[in-house]
Image (cartoon, rainbow, N blue to C red):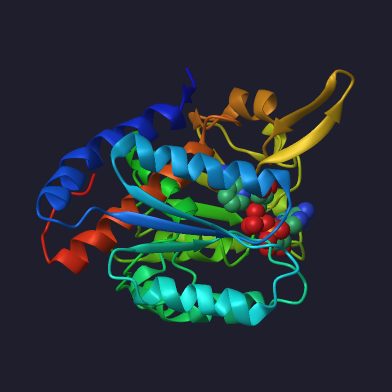
Amino acid sequence: MTEIIDGNDVAQDIRNGLLDGIETLTDAGTTPCLATVLMNDDPASETYVSMKHKDCEEVGIATRDIELDPETPAEELFDTIDELNADPEVHGILVQMPLPDHVDEREVLRSIDPAKDVDGFHPENVGRLVAGNARYKPCTPHGVQKLLAAADVETEGAEAVVVGRSNIVGKPMANLLIQKDEGGNATTTVCHSRTEDLAEKTRAADIVIAAAGVPEMITGEMLSEGTVVIDVGINRVETDEGSELVGDVDYDSAKEKASAITPVPGGVGPMTRAMLLWNTVKSASDVAEIDVDLP
Ligand code: NAD
């Protein structure tokens, strides 16, 4: 029987596990607070940001909601980030991507106070992650680690294949898997668009993590019996009835081979959102110098 790893359930457990810590911090006068900055007109980005606010509200994390017109000069965005950096009541800052062409994304990531960089994309935080001393683990790969743990998947000594090498998913995922730490110690191969014979690599894997942004590219034929399959991909594809969301894994054929698999939607997506809350609570706990249990 293939285990279907339910990301909604695991994410709910993470949110529940944060409640006591949020209460402790709030009672001590440090209500965790996440600020979001949205500077595009993309309806999908607007939805992502509003979902993040809703998630925060549900667990008692305060929010700041800043929206800038896409035409706003870059300096104004940097001034906004500076103000949030200086605001002692704000513990996490998330600048929603993509940004307009006249704004340099790398410069924006560098301008966020690393202590408030709950996405974990500031170069200082990337460096710390690579060095095995992470302050914030990026939300999506951290969520994948939690899913693997929830499904009792042993990473130590396992052959893991990460398909994708982006800065937000593939690279940090591979880095977490190789750390000499819980949820790490895996022998990890990173595959990408120039990899020759991807199927040879995925067939040799105990764990496949697909993050390529290519609809249903990982098929059952590319997997060995008993593989654990984590599908990070979120792709909107046209259908006769309109459109639907699919992952990077061809779910039906992969499920025939997998010992455990995540669905899309309802797998990694909810975990990414939950881990943002996790990082925000961690930031507030660091500022308050109060240790709280993090799930
Ligand atoms: P990206 O486009 O930045 O990176 C994709 C990576 O896949 C690249 O490194 C590329 O080399 C590799 N790749 C592309 N085609 C390939 C192929 N044919 N074979 C092997 N490798 C190939 O994308 P991203 O931001 O890393 O996101 C990847 C996917 O995950 C997207 O579908 C995205 O929507 C999704 N995503 C989901 C979540 C979530 O919360 N579930 C979060 C972030 C991204």
